[in-house]
Length: 112
Image (cartoon, one colour):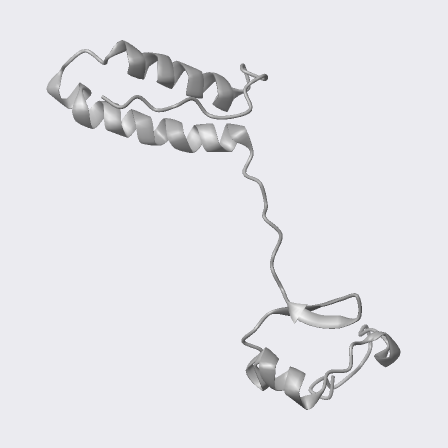
């Protein structure tokens, strides 16, 4: 904490984890290139929690990609979109807009 001109607002020194010189070097020293955390009184590599992406967000992303695919492979040629793709798009739209509240995974993209 020596780099701060004031300790106002900082935690009490007694609540901080005192690192050894080896731990400080392993963390990256002054550059702090390695993220670490204190768990059960031990300094360990920090692994950020996995933040789940909501299904509706996943569906919106897949929908944008599917629309591009359909346009580039059927629309631009003025061809009829295959039924499998229409069904897939409708399912994604329902998940994306909240109409489908029971699905827990995205539908499988057609392979044709």
